[in-house]
Amino acid sequence: MEEIVVESLLSGNREAQIEAAIELSNLSRKQRQKLAEREIISPLLSMLQSQDCLTTEVALSALLSLAFGSERNKVRIVKSGAVPMLLEILQSETKMVVLELAMAFLLILSSCNKNKVKMASTRLIQLLVGLIGLDRLTVQAKVDGIATLQNLSTLHQIVPLVIASGAPYALLQVINCCEKSSELADKAVALLENITSHSPESVSSIGGAIRVLVEAIEEGSAQCKEHAVGILLGVCNNDRETNRGMILREGVMPGLLQVSVDGTRRAKEMARELLLLLRDCSGYVIKNKQSKIEIVEQIMREIDQEGERIPGTMLKLVEEMISKLST
Image (spheres, rainbow, N blue to C red):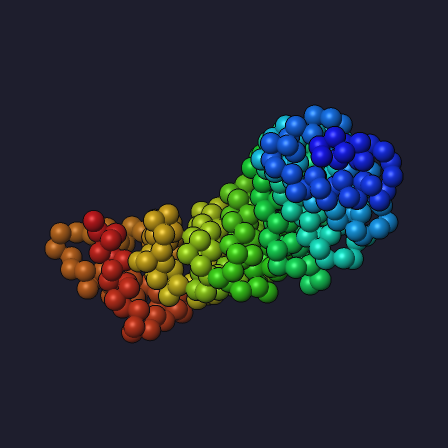
């Protein structure tokens, strides 16, 4: 069977190639890796250029099966010119299953460190940033697109390209429009935090960004809240004088206090650090004779001066937060 697959792919006969590509996807991983040594990648890539959706679909599936779990094959596929072909598919294809396969394929290829610079040197980043905001794209395709950008962004030299392509704005739009507790929101906020660590102003300079992040803190999953707090902390650390009041005016306190009590470990630490940044830290040195209720009242007064009122139900959260800060 393996010999028939190789011969059919190399034959040039399109019907035989389609059957062979389908059979390749059904082979065991060990068999697929063995066949990858026999120059079958080139004919599979040539099938991607077909105008026939079925041919493109089965070729993508076969290439995905070759790339999965093999760093060597991921490198071979990229070196053979797969990325420009995938860009063409993303720009011209209308069949959603093909678009999803292409996005998934890019995600797998981008997980290989040796591929990242080569992939980023194409139009890939700009195209992905444009695609993740399109309504016609499925949620899974958007998740894979954002995850691909995240993979590429692990190389610091690529982050400026991601920012220049308009990723901060596109990601904020995604977060604003999707369910805050969804995987899509988690992926978008995680990438946005990575971007913020390199360029806080690329996020803070966007109108409405703080409001979207405050909503993520209030409504998101535990991971989403963690990343959103991290972004606001980075923004505030970068320019406290400018951004402190802006963050407070968007009503961050209730959600931030909640995270400081029951968020992830990292989220709790960042939330408490941000809480101190949002008011005058020097006024909160806890002295032996100062009661916790006095500290709470002091914080409440500071919040009120900013025009922010915490409901009575939040008092217990404030007390818990102060208790944690004092230990």
